[in-house]
Amino acid sequence: MPQSLLRVLNGEVLDKPPVWFMRQAGRFLPEYRAVRAKVTFEQLLNDSDLAAEVTLQPIRRFPQIDGAIIFSDILVILDALGCEVTIPEGGPRIGKTLDQIDINRPLDEKVFEPVCDAIRKVKANLPAKVTMLGFAGAPWTLLAYGIEGKGSKNWAKAKAFIHQNPVLAQKWMDKLADAAARLLNLHIEAGAQGVQLFDTWAGELDADDYATFALPSVKRTLSQVTAAPTLFFARTGYLPDSLNDLPCKGLAVPWQVPISEARRRFPRMVLQGNLDPVALLAGKETATRKARAIVDAMKGHPHIFNLGHGLTPETDPAVVAAVLDEVKA
Image (cartoon, rainbow, N blue to C red; front, side):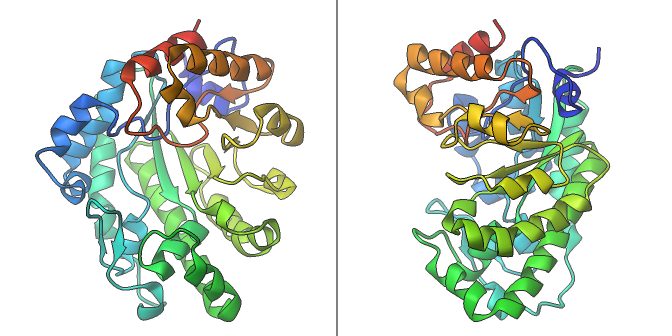
């Protein structure tokens, strides 16, 4: 029997949707915390054995999960461009911002070897029903980190940069788009059967700026990734109609947008999502009720159940299990 996640990504409607969770390999799992107690986050990223192990942890704990997304970080692309990324406990730091980097500098693909090796190791140990997933950060989100030098409350420097330096900003967006496509294709070559492009900070741009500045680069990335199905996730309270034109199989819907609205506006797209991660903090009754409402709203349409963003560290694994049981009931 073909994997349910791949069947849906290819447009099939199933009675029970496949399911995986963004950040399912992470701090909400005690077994992940046990690994992290021994190594730094950067050591975990660069040790393919450990990265494979934490990727497999949620698959072992929750047999209902249909997708294994590789443990990695979107900022590996900036590291491969010479930005000297470090990820201490307080969040990522960019040693050299993009305005300090030669735009003609080639991508150092050796930086991607640990994650590709981890994909191969996970793939060799996955149950047959589970789909191997890779991912990359989208150009705008990478540019935002690359200009700010760290996380930001309002991304003011990055937003100013695209207006004050439009030609250079566009050149960087093209370079980042090509780098993201290259990473996704390397993930596929290593064994990923589907990939997701994450635009985590899409909502920091207004709808006009996103459509004119960011979305063309998303298209540039996705148009270069054709060997496996692609999903696109823009974390924003608005979803522009122009997402209909993206060359991808599906959209991951943020929790702020009702999934029924997404179904109406993006009829040709496979839809993924979109339970609010915070609903899981409210307990089993709330989480399962809201999960059931999403599943019911998507009956008759290709749907992958997921969250509308990543699992939070405070999430009780027992609530995750209850949601999985409800979705698969």
